[in-house]
Image (cartoon, rainbow, N blue to C red; front, side, top):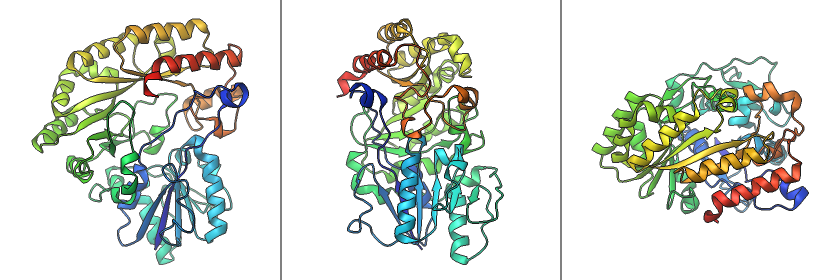
Length: 427
């Protein structure tokens, strides 16, 4: 089969820009579509192409398409969901072939994609289930696959009980399918080109705002070290490797062994990883080891400086723990990217407290995002009745989809000033 996989373009709407002319609140994602590269890696025997519309908005034109597809697959996060619908409907009319949708939003809210122009929805990890679907379609067999919601059938859906088998570790990502864009895949502050590698999938922590656990049914599944090292090598001379897992060091003993293997392999890469602050505090020696292995930057979801709000988010951490983690990481020489959540009920005093904390801390790159209850998360269930904006185009983490306590324009101008203060050097 000829299979076309699509990464949607940068999209989403901006309330501060539309209503108040504030143009500085934008977050543009420039990373490679690893989920699609991973899916493609398990489609040996088929002709596969990836159209990365974030890098090339014209990738779907007749002149740019590598072939006329027999099957179309589209991924997307929540703010891209409406765009995914438009792409799916357009390609269904254009090619009249099966259209499959997967990714974060499909895994959190599959019902959103129950549309006549979408044939199948992949819920959760798709590397194995998508291949199983392709095989069944090619053989003309009935589609009854765990993790695949069949819009064309009589109904019924069997959730997938994800295991390490779903990682299909022996099949590597098809990094070659987006090689033409490699020079443009970057991460601010990391320095140079960045390649994505997965060391694990899923998360067990259950933060109220997070959609990641939906991908694996709240399981934490580790890739083999051989697969991680293979993928790092496949990225060739790319100087920075971004581990894209929610919690790279979720298994401290396994992480220790992986660091030793990276060093033994002679990898000379700058490494970036997501970590939890409490992991740093419990295992400072692990991070000293990883610093030797090349760990240069960690991304930590601090989220808040208020313990009450951290508890509301089910973060299972404290502000004091965050302070200790910062101190440990800086003593080791690891740069910190700190994620923070700006709640719509913030007042001027809340903004100022966060600014004061960040400017006194040693966080190298603070990134404040607006609290956004994503469909399918516990936070959405809790706040659904209070949400005032339901158009998913606005779910970009820079819009308040809940009413603001401050006058709305004042909220956005204060937020924009904070962004300029924190991120101005990146522009």
